[in-house]
Amino acid sequence: MLGIRALKLLQEWGCCRRCIVIFLGERSDLLYGDMAVIDDTLKSAALKIKDESESENGVAEQGSETECGQEAPLQEGSEADGSRGEAQVSSEDSICDHMAKKQKCSVCITCLGLLQWGCSSDAVKLLSDAILSRGNDGDSFALALSFPVCLSLRVHRVWTLLLQALPNFPDKGRIDHVGTVKEVWKNIVGAEIEVAIKRKFMSKKYLDFILNVNSTHSRDMIECEIMETLCSAMFAVRRQQHRKYSNTVFTKQAIETAMKKVSDEEFLKACPEPPCVPDEAIVFQSLQCQQTSIYMAGRYNKYSRELPQTPWLVEGERKMETSVQELICESLLGAVKADDVKFSSSGREDVDVRCLGTGRPFVVEFINPCRTKFTRSEMKELQAAINSNTKLVALRDLQVVDRKDVKILKEGEEEKTKAYCALCIARDGYDPKVLDRLSGLTELTLNQKTPIRVLHRRCLATRQKMIHKMIASPVDDYFFKLHLTTQAGTYIKEFVHGDLGRTTPNLGSLLGVEVDIIALDVENVALNWPPRCDD
Image (cartoon, rainbow, N blue to C red; front, top):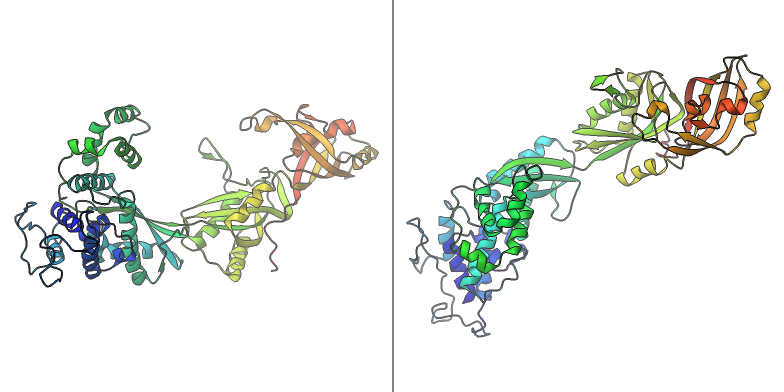
């Protein structure tokens, strides 16, 4: 039978049992079974594959069935002498029993031991310990695997030889062969890890917690060199691009592209023999736990005029001792135990500007966190701890939010309005009656060139901004307070002093006196997010 002949060839070349089952086209859950199941599946899968010349009722070739109609034991070549010999095992031994004995010391020529040692109890323990050592609080996990580039090359090589030897052998499983190897490994190992760590293995797409397994093989790059011979022009170009391919020109994508360009006939001329039996199995070079980010949002008040929103560094030198971001994130990071954080807010105030009222909305993304579950009571405790540790900032409405809701923070930046209070000075004095002019000005359009103070980090442009309303109240003969509500992104300081005429109209031109700003407070950021917490 065609399937029996294929099985014998693959066995003689040095394929493991699971790989042979994959070559024979099996794609069911039987691939994930133990060796007893694999042995049964191996036999049934081989017997299903028949040549067109074979009868439809399943009568096999000469010698494939006994005279009484029962299936004869399958046979394979003996490798006791270390060669790919042609000697046959005795009829009383099954092919699968013989393969089991042989594979205790032989590494599979196609999966490189991934479906052998890679599925062993030692491998399962290694992977289980990697997950547990992370200290993650999740209930589920998934696996992601990257394997040596030469694994794909070896599979391709065996397929070309198999189809050369057996032209009628069905090749529908050739396209997804490598992907099937990966899925088989994940489902076998995932089920074992699930038992070991008491967490559910997610075989389908799952992004919350993934163990990324990067596997390598000692002969990986050496075996890929044959593709440079077959596709010399392609790899010559890649070798000239030193920066782009500084690590290696033999990337997975490059090898797959090259294999598509080379016909089976050309490939067989360069590789007329099966791949050699590896001296060693695949190894797990690195194990990395990847937990999806969690997001905490809230609103902060800033009470200091000597506190930047984010760390202020100039040419690597710190200008201020701390920042809003650090005061908030350092405490939260200790609770979440993440690798890193990203702080974002709805706009930002200058270092010398206070943020009062209900505060400024912010969100913190915790990258690869260990802890992802927090009760409302725990969030209150975190907020209280930050508020008690400093008088520079205060938090409110601290809560865990979904990633999809974070976009509200950025979408509202251009649409929201802000309310300010500016303490202004007219150095030559002013008539209190001129302040009344301001209350009658609504929806005032400003033309603001990029301020001189930020030209070093923002491009030169003229931006139109809107002042929705304003009202001024005198403090004494020189000072007065200006309350105004503006479009987000309006430069308030420049509106007050004019920025050497770069903002028009400005407060000085509206009042007819020279004006400067002494202090500025943000009194309200009109963005109704995150939701207010009842406590």
